Length: 484
Image (tube, rainbow, N blue to C red; front, side):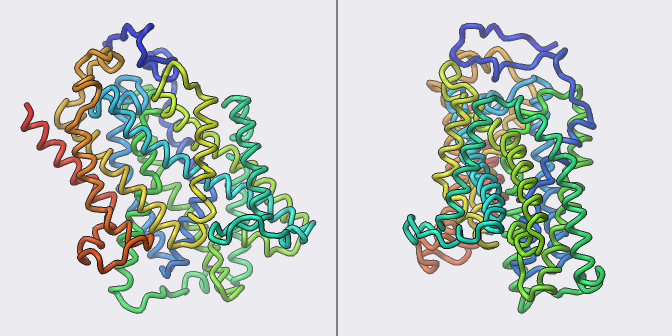
């Protein structure tokens, strides 16, 4: 029997962060399977797969990379999900055990900023869908005079529709999460049908699957392939690195550990691989049909001849993207921002903060090309979140043996308050896990010349999530042994 914390007046308490009592936990195996099927069926998943084709892989190399990446990330997903189910607590509260009641804001903010980036990417996708629709009926929008600096890489027309779609997202935040339920139902029906329609189109125009599957990889030799494969695999792990941390936000509603484990294990790798296969097939077909690789499905849809078909497709994409954005990229960071000041920041305020940062992160640059999408965005933030995962898993399984004091997680004077709310062993371990990946990141974004660092140090960035996870976990374990 888990004790109920006496936290009614505690500054660490809010209704959003409180433990979910057993009688209110109703998510079963099917609910978790449905969650991952819904989360996987999104435009970024399609772009994830097609970006590997754009980077030079053939169809089976891309699919295998995605499958392996999702098998890897499933492990921390299930391990971190255990605490949510056992204690009914969300991610920011779970992080208090390892980082401290105040220090938990560090991993919460790291994850929240990444979620803001995803919010920006999804908002850009929805806004660009609107732009494609407007351009069909009003081609002049493409000729609007530039008002942004050239270095921003932002044309005026797409910027206008992006802002419109951003305002629509913020209006939904104002209305509250309940307003998105019908849109989620629409998405659940529309996106699978749209994906199958795209698959049918690809097979028809390419005259069967044969020509598509015969498309070769474009690497000069095995050395070039492996140089692309390992950072790509890290990127696949990084795709769900945020959810591998904040999965307690969902598993806190599980009826049992079996429900969350089985549901996730059955649905995550399978749904990601199947939907990615469609992306791979369609992207390969564009190479055959158009003579160039089109990895963005919105750009591809814009090439269709029927104005009505383009309009319907783009409106549907915008609506389904709106639903995904609120459910996946607003709820969790809003909770994380609320963790900064539980008594002052509510869901709506947290959502507005997410929206503003989502613009400032320049999402159109993150997905401008396959290299930027994988090597800068996915691999880059995995170097921050891998260390957090290593610390939390080592703390929960090796140090605490899955036993937490629920009262103290909400107590500023409890065992998890450590030194003024910070557990410095976790902070030091986090820094230790991030540092090895900094040189590779700086050279990858061309802020520093590659020859400024040894080649082996730059190459560590290709394994950013794995390096950070292992280094932080080992350092955290060592520091706890020394201090005990």
